[in-house]
Amino acid sequence: MSKLVLSAKKREKSGSIPARNLRKLGRIPAVIYGRSGVSLSIDLDAKEFSGNVKNITGSSIVTVDVDGQSYDAFVKDTQRNICDNSILHVDFYTVEKDIAMRAKVHLLVQGNPIGVRDGGTLELPLHEIEVECLPKDLPERIVVDISGLKANQSIHVRDIALGENVKLISSGDQVVALVKFAKAGATDSEEEAASESGAASEKK
Image 1 (tube, one colour):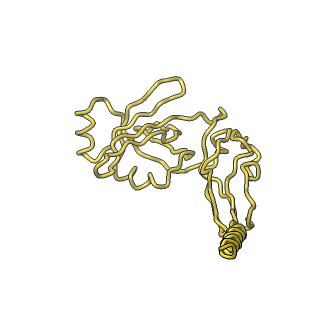
Image 2 (cartoon, helix red, strand yellow):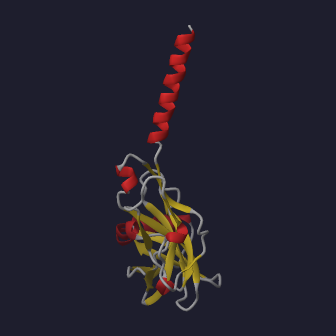
Image 3 (cartoon, helix red, strand yellow):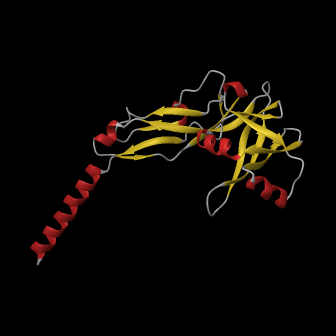
């Protein structure tokens, strides 16, 4: 679980004009949403959040300190300016430490497959899986080693090692990585085409 702590202040005014004024002061308007539907309007230091956002994944749990009161939460949504990509607004969603939750976790593929070194093509059709666990057991990302993958072999979701307290929700039959090897097939096709061409020439 992420140890990132973000400092925030409670925001009294809402609306586009107060939000615009906050951004001019180097702050980002944000909202923390709770499980019960209660929300809290806050603002963040733009420099602090922008410097850390690249390290926050879809399953990262951050601590938001609002005037001394802490909230453990996900970053649910980040709105950006389409012109300069600056962050305009952030939505957080709180978690409760003793309640199991479901979340999608990013798959980080590592390694150079044997099959690729032999001339195959690597395909990565899946980039995240859904799991269920307590917040303390939730991984920020799951590393999948594909270095031993040979030609025409694949790794499925069921092959991924998860923590003992983490339950898989996604289908285990989904393919995470696949090495296709079409080199031999291409050669056969070329030989067949050449044979047909030669036969056609003899008939003439």
